[in-house]
Structures are given as C-alpha cells and as structure tokens.
Amino acid sequence: MAVKNNLKMIFSYFRLNVKKEWKYKTSFFMQIAMMILNDLFFIIQWYIIFQLVDNIGGYGFNETMLLWAIAAGGFGFSHAFFGGAWNIKDIVYDGKLDVFLTQPKSVLLNVSCSSTDISAIGDMIYAYVVLIIIGAPWHWYLLMIPAMIIAGLIYVSVYVTYVGLCFYMKQGDAIAKSIEGTVNKAANYPPHIFNYVVKGLFLTLIPTFFYTFIPAQYFFITFNIWWVLGAVAVTALWIAIAFATFNHGLKKYNSGNLMGGRL
Amino acid sequence: MSKYFSIYRTSLKQESKTLGNSLTSVISFVVIIYIFQQLWQFIYGGNGGGTLIYGYSVKMTIWYMIMAEVLMYSVNARGTTRAFANDIKSGKIAYQLNKPYNYYMYQISSQAGAISWKLLFLVPTGILMGLILLGPIPGFSIAYVFPLLASLLLAVILTCIIYGTAGLLSFWVEEATPFAWIIQKFQMLFGLFFPPEFFSASLQPFITYSPVYAMMSGPCKLMANFSWDLFWKVSLSQLIYIAVFVIIGFIIYKIGTKKVNIHGG
Image 1 (tube, rainbow over the protein chains, first blue to last red):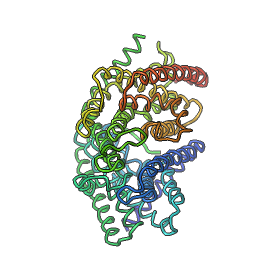
Image 2: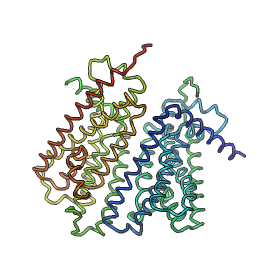
Image 3: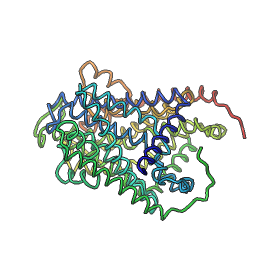
Image 4: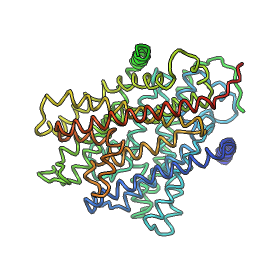
C-alpha cells in the first residue's frame, strides 16, 4: 500500500511539474529538442573512433551506443522524476527544509520529486532515438524501460547518499558532484578499458557499472536473469543507503526559521 | 579598466573561499584524464608503441586531451551563460544597469576571476598527470611554457566571452542555456575529442577557421607539437575572435537592454 501511495505521489509531482513548465511552451519544447540534439553529437564522436578501431574490448559502435542510450535514459529518468534531489544542497544550507518536514510523506521523496528538469525528457527520448539508429530488435524498446528505471534510481541514490554530507559539513556537495561526475563520465565508455582496481571501484563505492554496463550487457546483449536480479538488488540497496544517510543527516539539520509556502 | 580589475580581484578572492570545493572538483578532472588515457592507449594498441594516427603519437594525443580538458574544466560554460540568463530572467539586471560599469564587462571580469582560480589547480594537476601517465612531451622546451600559457589564457577569455554572449540571448528567449549546450558540443566534438587532422580533408579548413580552433584545437595542438609558426597563427585567430565576439556581445547587450521593462517597487 505504501509503495502504491508513494508511486502515486511521484507521478502526481511529475504531472504538476510538467504542467508548470508547460506554461512556457517555447522553452519547454526548445529544452527537449536541444537536449536531443546535444546528445546526438556523441554519436559522431564514436563514429570517428570506430573508424580507427573495429571494437574496444569487444564493444563495437552499436554496443557503445547502447551504453550511451542507457546512460542518457537513466540520467533523464532521475532528473525528470527526482530532479529536486539536485537542490538538496541549497535547501539544506539555506535552511529551507522546514516546508518539507511538515509533509505527511517521506521528506527525501518530497524534496526529490519537488522539481523536474524538462530537458531530461529529451534524454529519455534520446535513448529511443539511439535504439532506432542502431537498428535494435523490438524487444529492446521494451527492455529500455526497466533499464532506464534501474539506471535512474542508481544515479539519484548515489548522488543523494553523498550529498547527505551537506548536513555535516560546508561544501559537502563537492564530493557528491565529483562522484556523480565520475559515474556519469565513466559510464559511457566500454568497460574493458579499465583495470581491475577501477572495475572493483565501479562495482562498489562508485557503482558506474550498475548504471550502464550491467543493464547493457545482461538486459540487452546477453540476457542473464541472475545479473538482472542482482542489478535490482543493488539498486534497492543503494536506495536504502540513500534514505538511511539522508534521514541520519536530517537529525543534524538546523532550521532557518523561514516562512515559506509551496505553490 | 581598473574597476573591472577590481571586479576580477573580488571574484578571485570569493572563489578562494571555496578551497575544499576546488580541490574535490579536481577529482572529476583526474578521472576524465584517466578515462581518456585508458581509451587512447586501447585505440593505439597496448602501450601505443610507435603507432601514429594522422601524425599523432599516443603521447601527443593524450597531451592534446590534457590541454583540452584544462580548457573545458576552467570555464564553467553553462554557468557563464546561466549567470547572464538568470540576471536577465529574474530582472536582477535592472539593478545592475544603473551602476557605474558596463554589465557585460562586469560579468566577463567576474567570470575571469573564477576561471583564474580554477586554473591554479587544473594546470599543475594536468601537467602532473601527464608526466606520471605518459612522461614529458617529446621535443618540449622550457621556452614554450610562456607562449603556451598565453595561448591558454586567450582561449579561456574567448570561451568565456562566447558563452556570455550566448547568455545575452535571454533578452529574447526564456531559456538560453540550451544554446550553451550546443556550443559546448561543437567545442567538444571539433576541439576536445579529436585534433582537426582526425576529420576529413574537406572539413579541416572549416575547423581551422572556426572559433573552436581558437578556443580549443589551436592551443591543444600547441601543447602536443609546439611550433612558433603555429603559435602566431593561433594567437592571431584568438585575438580576432575575441574582438569579433566582444563587438557582437556589445551589440546584443545594447539592443537587449532596450527591451528591459523596469516596474520599480
């Protein structure tokens, strides 16, 4: 029941956020279109690289593009449905969390869902544009939905886990940004270029591989139910860690005594 | 000019208060250099040997990338555009217009302060990483340090001016940051990821005469394979583009400010 209620809330927030942005229609469409165009540039980058080599550790153009599709889709999903998570730093430092504390649902969920980055919708569309470009089989279009959700949830959970440092220290978001940057950048490259130490890191503290490589390899290329279940379990674990660190940090929060309302 | 130098100094001082932030942001820079190094080592095959791709050895390519990443990381492209865009959208610009300075120059000077601070970390980190991962650039001389730094500074100034000019488009559109995304992608594709020689012969003249060359490819080529001829060519292109974009910026600013409605209150 609680899961159903929370899902309902997430979608209600998303609908309201989109409605709010819809008021500026030119900006709305321009942000989405520009993001798709922005992402398309990377196809040219990899096209040129694969003119130089046939494959990179077994990953050819199509497989690498699949990594990009999942990364873009996951990034888009996280910023579309949980865009408010990237405001946590400002909300905590400005003492503006009070207005969320009085809400009946989870504070973290309320904060995370409170904002939607409209351009993120462009990222999600781009994931499907890539599937069209690489001539993906029909069932990949369906598999992209769980892949985007897993990638998106991992991405936002990792960020929230580390941005929780803002409750304890000044400029606590700097580490979160670095980790996020690492997850985001490393995720788009064929995993075989990394050595074992880095691979170990990307499977644990900075779960880059669960963000793109594992969904790409085991959801799409060589389907493996155990890896799929493993990815779901790791995602659930990161969500739990994000909630635990945020709730622990919340005890350190100092109110700014600001009067505020949410319209 | 001294007032803009004061703005620059104030911004530099302000940035120096975020030492922890600056140090941790270097981590991201280190990660991307490492990724590129791994990728290009793989492409060149193992340790790279004596393989040349379009005249570039693996060492030259990665030193090119290091310079390119220093340029990318030092200018907060989207932040620069957003700084203009936010002031225009929020109406905050109205408070700046009656100040005894030119708002456009104010923002550029302020951004330049932030960039200078970042360069203090990025340049030594980039050099250190290059030396550790690759060793020194073949044929590099200490005499090249000053011209390289000059080229780097002109490149970041030009980049800052171009993204600032994009931000001024907020006078007409509600959201100017998508323009910054697209400029950034041109900069990455034709400057950061590959030297101009990696593109087809028909495309190379367009890249060489484009602002991307002055912002990115030119200084990076100097880093990979310095020559005085190239230095003068790159510097000339940088100075021309700085002048061109400053003029464009002033024109847009002048037309744009006429569109500002001040309601008081």
